Image (tube, rainbow, N blue to C red; front, side, top):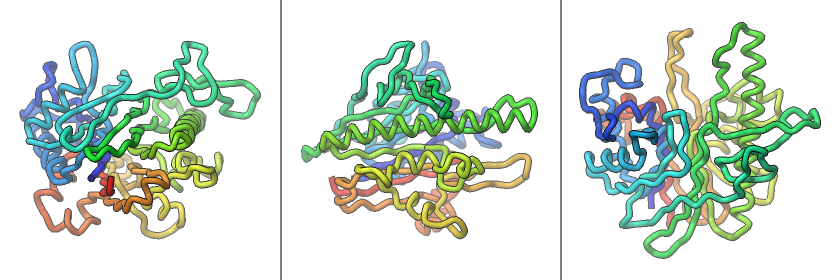
Length: 341
């Protein structure tokens, strides 16, 4: 079975108010890419990975007049994808939802949120992901209230052979200092955002521990917007949010070979899953942001990971159509996991 995670940059911009694809020459959210070009590219990538299930990060919006599920299923129909049934969890107000497209002939998937509802006062531990976590972020003996701008998607899945497992799809908040008045204010915002992101990682880690303790296999995937050595604040806080979620020092560690490789070195080549244009420097920056992490029970089922990087993966590189589609479709590249379930 093939499982994938894919952040499709501004997927919502490719649909009209009736959740139909807008195949025209208007600009998409991608730099110098029309909607028609991005739609064709995204469709080509989904066809190429041919996954049983794809965790779609930055999925189309759900709102008063729009439906993530309808839009994704219309997209799947347009490109004749076997992963043609969509499921999502709690919606958000960022126009970047988290949803799963899956093949109903090979598995079933349903939204299955865990944890207690919190109300406005919040709760400690691992409350439901659409709630509020109370946690002391700066060791001042005062609890802060943390929320997910994009609540993670918790799913219960069953394969056609009867194998039960769970998925968590996550898209953690960016640490960029938006709205900063000057360098000092930018530093203040960055540190505050870093604390919030680490708190979200602690929240996710608590849910992972709870889930694995029930004996049900678990995988966590998505865009964690962070990674070992990614920024200067790692020294300040000691660990990246990726390390917190992996939980290597705990009793229920998760594993991702790309994260493990990056954690094992500070200098030298490492895997990357994204390619961003840095306007101030007039160049592209590559980073490892997307992961598929598995528990020990799933790691024992012969998992094989792959980053569909157009320049690094030899199969992608030797297929010019796919190579160009990967570059045009998004600033992230898919990560797939082939596993015996």
